Length: 294
Image 1: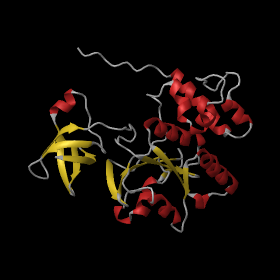
Image 2: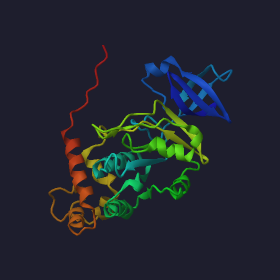
Image 3: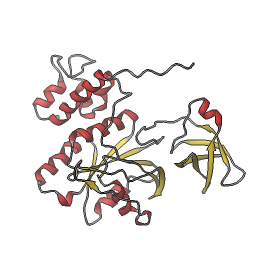
Image 4: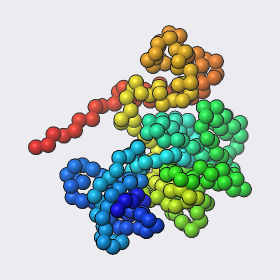
């Protein structure tokens, strides 16, 4: 039988197949081959009833995320608060780079707009990312924001991501009130929300599947190589062909079209500063060595 893993909890994998849900376990040889099934995986499984199935094979993935652990994702809604916790260009760009690396289409959803006092700053954020070509949706009390977001859901697997306390569970509760997902309280000492989502699950919403997943306040670029980073900034890619050097890293090279774009205010300075910081992090990270088997 063929199906899709829609939930992983306590060693069980819940597989949707032909309008039914089957509770399954992974075969022991998965562990031997160091294969971990992920929510979103297309799988081959066997089951004589709905509670005692076994996963036999995981079909090839088009992508996979580590945080959250979901495979075959089509789009990622980066839920970013404008206040409480305060907006961070750096954090948003981290999520965007991660999604670009995995080939996942980003949608930026800005929450808590009703609490914003500096409207000019909010407009600058919207315009910065709209100019790059990203979909940007700003929260509205009237519900127009939900209609705008829901039109992206049909026939796609969507992941909600963003820092804790940004409002992911609150947003999903607005979309599907019967979910009644637990929402966190912002820790005043840290300015971060408590993690409130306990497991990964794909929820059927608006003719698509949506993952409600834990929010993280930081992302480590563990797999991205330095030479790949310039290609993960669409605003850099748009002008990179005009750089003197084909493999320009946009740092100290002469006649760099990206740096010229920043100087001319055609590329946001925040984006460039974050790019330089991310590049330093990648170049300075410690190599990860795998332990040899005895």
